[in-house]
Length: 255
Image 1 (cartoon, one colour):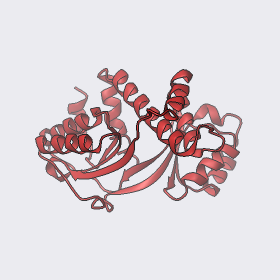
Image 2 (cartoon, helix red, strand yellow):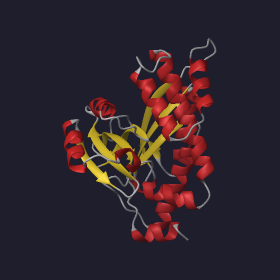
Image 3 (cartoon, one colour):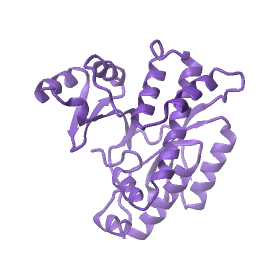
């Protein structure tokens, strides 16, 4: 169900092993700083009265972002020279017809769309019309809760509380619980977790693939190179796709 998250969790783990951790961490910090800036600029500097800012700060804490970076981002957002970020999405297809959904936060739309179009064209893909991938991706709320936050709580009672708060699915892993909600119940779940005194490691709205497309390994590798180029662009926050990670592809990536 959650194979596609963050451009495929398995693919992210493979890149992690290949030494890309620092690069991905820097990218995550960049995204969180933008989230903080957008939230503070639109809703004020007080997280108590600004749920979006409270969420961004929470995610910064979960990513172990230094406190001074968070404070500086909030102060900068209220200054006269603060960047005006626009949050825009783009949809398209990579080589082999694999669907790609891109979320951006940019202070220069012309630059962003030109870069995205160039990456697609050079990789044998093409940008599509927004809304054309509504049948491929569902908009879901995803909450990652460390197991340490659940110590001393009765699991059955907690599950009941989470379902009451709008959980559609709860996946229990060794280190954390992953809670999925509908787009509409994202805010309700955020509130429920706060009421329960549970601090999440990360909470976000994500595009979850409803169906997947497989490609021959050479084509799949070419597609994933395009995804990496998109993820490396500073204006792009998140890239989702529906490429199926076949056993053959995983074996090739792990070499």
